[in-house]
Length: 544
Image 1: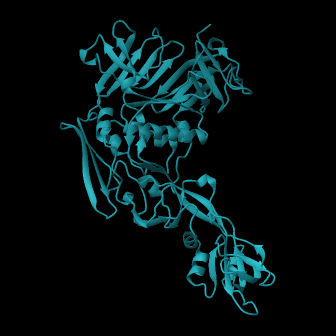
Image 2: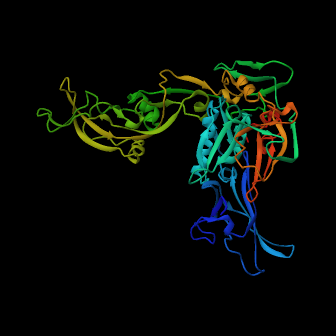
């Protein structure tokens, strides 16, 4: 028996019974794994004749897994079964895939809506993008995400979760992202950083390294100095420009956070300023009258009517003769207006409206809630009750009712007069924010110019993430080599030029020949990242 087994999916032609690879007619079995790319399992099955399919032939789009020594090495989905005739042999070339394309299948944002993240942890933003991909149907799990550093506010428009993940990892040049297949269920997306990777030294003449071999540094990928230029604008519109610097030397990488559309980070927001004032919780009568357009109009021009909250101590409605003073109803208890308990600690906006940039740039969050309350209005008359005013119809449409036509008595003096009493219990959908703003205050959108000040250590963090010389090239290990995962290791070479003894090269992709154990590896940065660090950051934009 071989050390390799394979299984498919229940109720498929290659079912979920694990079988030894030697039992199958598979040939040319290879597993390829990549940094931030597509992983594949490929093999060929020959047919006895042109009309007879071989045993263990998987179906299109079915799940397939392969194991070595009981440990899963790959799980993916058949995406390219190709029937071929070559060299007089009929057969199927099968390829199953997995990898970052699972995130590419899920949209993070549309062309009409932005995905935004406030200034903060890059690792948390990566985790959030992956979580959203999983919620959208990506067949992966969230694994360990290496600690990174804080970045400015960033947004994406019209992109997939996969593309956004790649753009985010461009910021941290020493990050490697791969799928860990060793568990059960979906593979876990894992991000590691070069500094915490273990080192593997391959010794020429001892380890079975064979031709071809090549290795060279990637030019222009290691800055000695990083500058971060940004500008902020205060509430008075005064712009202050600043350059944050880390390192020294002539290999300068300039990152722009504000200004044109070429900025490396850029928040999109409507320009201008908004004046905000909140009411109390629960709001006072004056606040409530401002929030309701109908009540505001009545308050401004109510003719001979008077208005008050229904809990006013002077509001008493009586029935019967003035002398008997039989009490019909009394006021409602305070508070005058109430809001849901879920909004405890939030404040209703009496003036202004909440904008998205307030959350991104100012940290002011918003919720929508319902305010409920009661109030009465009355008009004194003698004889026949007067007709209701025209605007009363608007209140009737909102649920107002005529409570009583009759006597009214002041609770302190006992004097009684004829009154038309109207009773109104409005419910208003109001925006609540998580900040009390007692006096009307203008808030300016700093995002219409660029962004707020970035994290204080951004330049130093960018420099530290690029403080290594990346190498590109290839190496091959013979069939006598025991395969192991190389993506999460730094590679050194001994027994060759001393210049290669401690390079700590990153592996871009690796292919294992399952039948022989031979390994082909490509060194370099992730293929989707591009060659140079400066180019990586220059392409980063919130409008990706």
